[in-house]
Image (cartoon, rainbow, N blue to C red; front, side):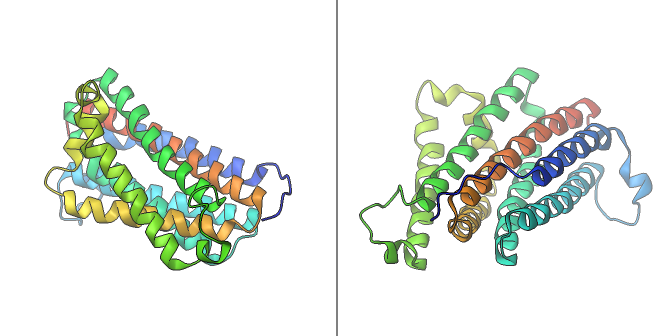
Length: 250
């Protein structure tokens, strides 16, 4: 891994800014519109239609941001697909699955949940970043670190660690009474197995995307910063969206 120092590309900053601005407008407007009036050919209820349309638009916008990032960082097309897998599945959880709990969240609870859950995602990405730098599993030689088996082992370990936090740590006082614990319990009710599979695929996508970028220290750092920025944007937009859904009563 080289030690070049490269600033975070301005093209990516512009793409992230545009995504955040467009996304903020969408999550503020979509909850207020009766989409079934304009999309009557789609056979579903209003709430699911709002969730689906929002998630679809965000997926397209995310793909555009990642494509800009791929070009700016000179990464292969495989990185784009793994990064899109990572981000796309997060969009599914945030804008398809978790809004089902919005009726239970007050403004204060919503803010606390956004911060708490967002930090959990960022901690996960940080762990993948450290692994890609070779700072986790140091006892393995460089050849073993590059093997698919070790990457899969790390992904499985991170999956177990995150679930340990969710199931055990957040069930202990005083964390058991926090907004984050309530949120995590709510979204895994009824669809825990499916969401667990999605969570593991999210981790795999992150591990592969970081592994592709680790040939250059600066590129790897910029991929990490991009990941954190996307997570922050998703969670802020999610909070606005959920509040809008609650206000419109749909």
